[in-house]
Length: 138
Image (cartoon, rainbow, N blue to C red; front, top):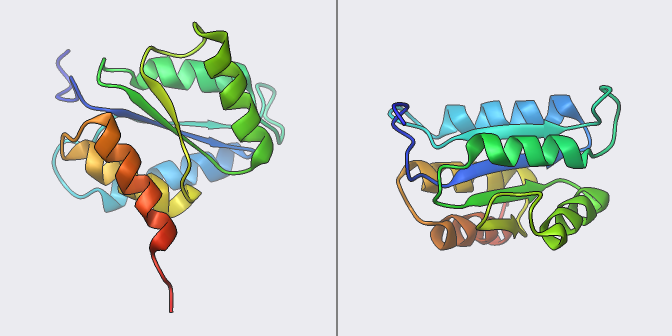
């Protein structure tokens, strides 16, 4: 690959809203700083543009960001989690080494993308995203 993201963990952001998924992806990219940014894709809403979660969009996004280093998938709400779990259970609907990440959607996305962009492996990306649960806002 010639896009300098070879061997980087890919990030997929799954939301019930295409606008939310795309906005969080844009925010994470902006906060990841300069240089090469790990591949990130938004998978929001349904195929016809409505609110909901689309297995097809999630699968397409995961394959688009796969660089053979793993794919971290972050979700916004419960049924998005169920969609990703169902895809993982199928076994061939997502790239090998795709992992559902239990993290806050916005903070976790930023932490995951910053960590992946630094060249970290999937376990480190997952740990960084999950650590966002302990960030206090007081």
